Amino acid sequence: MRSNFIFLLCSLCLFIACDKTEQKPDRDALLDEIRAAEKAFNDMAQDSGIAKAFAHFAAPDAVLNRSPRLIKGPDSIRVFYEAASQPGQNLSWSPTFVDVSNDGTLGYTYGNFNFSMIDSTGTERKSQGIFHTVWKRQADGSWKYVWD
Image (cartoon, helix red, strand yellow):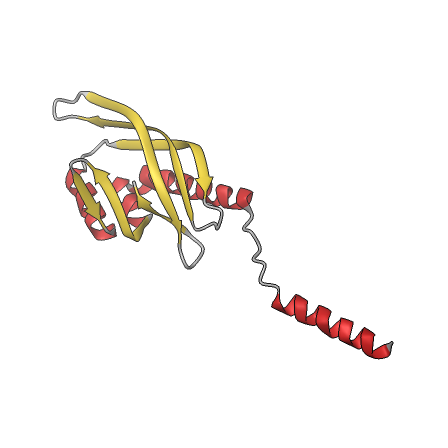
């Protein structure tokens, strides 16, 4: 009887030790992290400028789709926006939808953006549209965009 109990106990310990069940990430927490990254990105664009924000939140392999061009990498993204920068530009956005992959490594957002600027004649020009951003969780746990 005692040997059966020891065998059962050892079997149970072995079973527990070999359990490879992965814990699923907390989906709601990940969605909140992506929303927070999107808000911080927008806030930096307001406070520090579009070029700085887009370069800062870009992953090393980030790509901007600015038809007909693809701009690749944070440095090229910064240069692209610095070249297009004019005084009085304002870009703001807010996601209306956020989702994350089951493994918690990729997410995406979309929503509305508003852009305004003062042209060379002093006239305010405005445009609105839809944005779509793909986010990738970095090794340090932060979120950076890989596609915009």
